[in-house]
Image 1 (tube, rainbow, N blue to C red):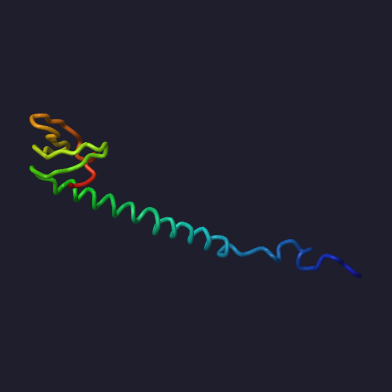
Image 2: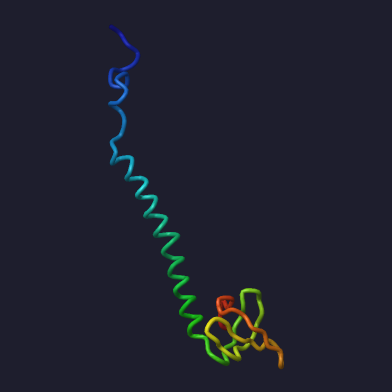
Length: 100
């Protein structure tokens, strides 16, 4: 008999990919996300943590809110900045973004 649908497609299951062929693209997506998003973010976080640990009295810094100041006192969790003559503010160390 003449049929418009080939037998391979009519059977229903012959053209489906295997389990491994379905998992490989998902694994590749996970690897790409790790390499391009998660790993660089972890490196940047580690670098910032080392920078914060290296702060000492007399360093000129800028905060995440754009305040320039000089480190007067470094405590365990926060530090004191002098932003003008005899004007001191106390901020959390993580708010320091760079040295000037």
